Length: 270
Image (cartoon, rainbow, N blue to C red; front, side, top):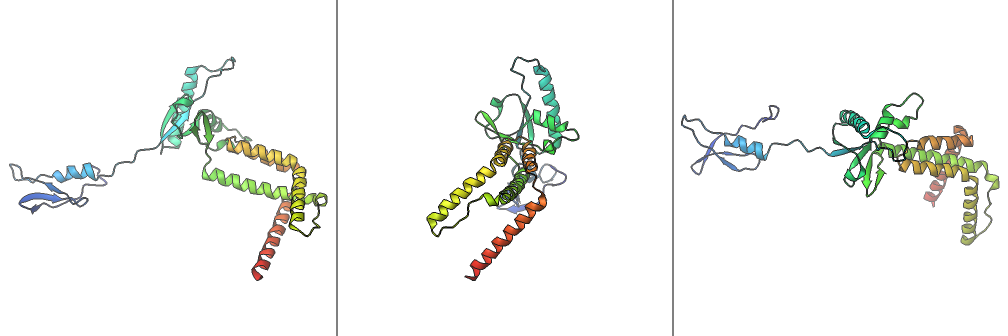
């Protein structure tokens, strides 16, 4: 019985000629009796503990995938050393994320389908980050098993960070296209077919202009969805390679938003 949440006091009643306590939770009549000394039993307390006491919820199981021995013929730490490192990281993870019931496993086959898992190597790498290292190293990256693979499952915070980065990329790409406006086709037609032809040609030309930037953007996308912490560095390098100042990007974004607002206002008037 918990001292913080004691069993409620329920008085004895005589109902139908019997001594009972009526449970306030389920209204069941719990039979009582008097002993040889005239004291009334408290069978209700046992009933309440068994049926109504809130039990501590079972913690979700979390898994930690241990370091794998080298299979390329090159020398490396032995199996015992790898397991010892795994145990050290396991204790650290238990302290940092105590809400999960952690278990160390040593091969993917021991991991239940869809279960949350961290990799010892990534946790170890992030824990020993040095000054100047990519700050993304400090982020915990969760995975789950899908058949014979681990699939990165980003947190809400990581997805928000990715969305913000993609928005910046879109704005920078637009500024790049704006710099080459003179190389783009001009629409001179008066039909839907002419517009579709113009739009297709313009899109093709934009892709040619942004070809290298788009390749770096796509590489960063692959890195993010594979759980590779270097994705942000890849995007940053792609933006830096263009040499487009932030003021230029912001100015174009402001002009674009103003044009959209003006168009929406015109449509509302109509």
